[in-house]
Image (tube, rainbow, N blue to C red; front, side):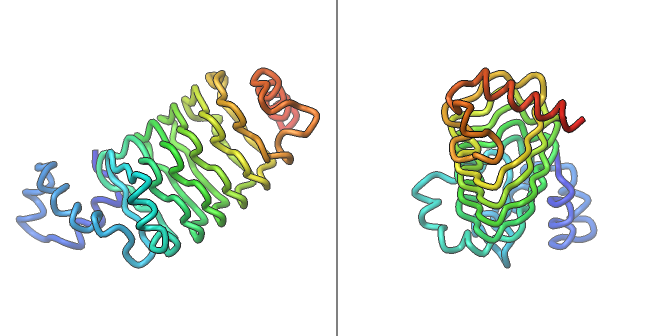
Length: 210
């Protein structure tokens, strides 16, 4: 599966017969783009592709460069956003996660202080921990149209401005402390460790908004 971003990038790199040949050769397309992906941030654009986890040691090494990221480009066969992929991208404000993504892995968007808007695909089923921890500008999350079944430990912990979240009926499993530090979403009189109480509160807020 080739995303539109992937195709646009390749059109800028190859022309004519070469492009026509590569359209039918997945590995060839991927090899040409990998050279760009491996360099990480280019002019504030972070490129992600299928299975490209960024593990903690690498994330630490890319810490300063990640501060430059203002846009995420999804390329080839993206079924998940890998671990630490956008960790500490403090200038990233808007993310459009493409169709086909099934999971957002641990700390993928952790400490993205400027993140205000995230579009989630219908294919999404799982959040790793702590996927959006300390996204302090995020105020609304719409998951209603997803197939989300589980939110892992502290997925939205310390999202201090989070006021609204819509969730699908399929969502029944919440990790511990998922909304700790989210007092604008879950008031202090509700125990954030009580999954049933938290889910009931979110459902009641959704009904009140409809």
